[in-house]
Length: 119
Length: 111
Image (cartoon, rainbow over all chains, first blue to last red):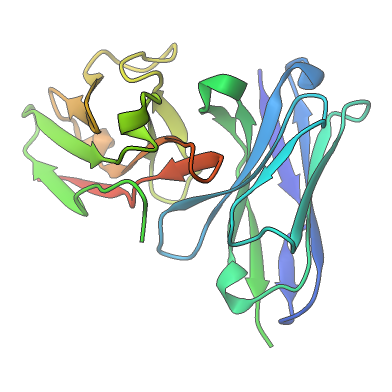
């Protein structure tokens, strides 16, 4: 069974940093692209970042480019999202999702991790 | 503002059929990229409902179907059930941003 478990969320002050991690199991992690999607309270889904299966390419939404860094450790079956210069508008539940690469869809999602940016 | 446009809400009585539209542009749906649909039940993570315009993952009832034409796509739900009450999101790829784009979501109410 595919499982994705996000950790690392919490309350952070504006301008601060936070690192989210997503532990994957139940599939050959190194074969799959991985993606982070976020959802602000009461709002819709927003694509944040994607990393290829081997980490060779990374893609970011304009809203986070230059502030967020996606990375992965295939030996540990995990993907991370390093977030810096956080703003109030970054407050959201962050989901990691298994990405079907060039088919561009997400077939399994984690339960989400809440990040709150507030003073 | 979302790149893909969905109606904010739709409703239907149990047993009825409803459709949810998703309209994009020339760099996403109109460029030939597939449309995918997700169901988000209250308080839960999104779940893949339809991929590749009209394909259902294992376990998704055949009451759910998708279609795509030109710059638009639709999700149809037949034989509405109370358990279908959820938010539904369309998603595609946008070559102008080299990333995925979502619709704003449609809240389905089963009357």
